[in-house]
Length: 191
Image (cartoon, rainbow, N blue to C red):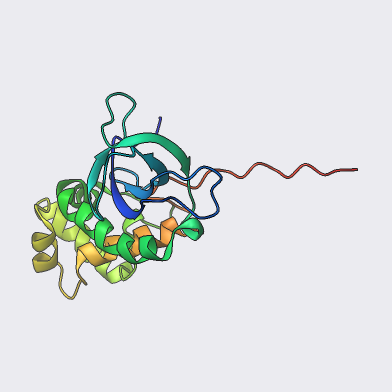
């Protein structure tokens, strides 16, 4: 399955590019809407983009994005991008509420001892049992529904956001929401 992004949102815009770049061009750092892929793109010179703006990055007919330069790691984000990422990711979560609520309705076990929902910070065995019991009675319809029917559950949006941030750091064993980091090619040893 190809994990490509069609749309992404701006988390930083550098109209003059990076000072370290050989060719100075407008550059933006983006987060994908589907797999939260972190990307660095060239923006067309005549275009100005703003933080949080939704951009089409599919293969054909891009209007703002000249080219996708590369996929980047969390450690390569600018300070502005790191600050904007939680807010932009939270907006994406709200915009895709039905997808995330479906996870609460359909998630299953990863192993005998671990359930997918337990990967969300704040969900332990007690919350898990209550979530499974409530969804068996009737599927959840919204974040508000989840929170009202599962006692003492923290805000589901924040649980998802914290998990996304953890996965973006690249140190997770399991990935629920984020495209796993690219495998770094092995270093070639010189003799």
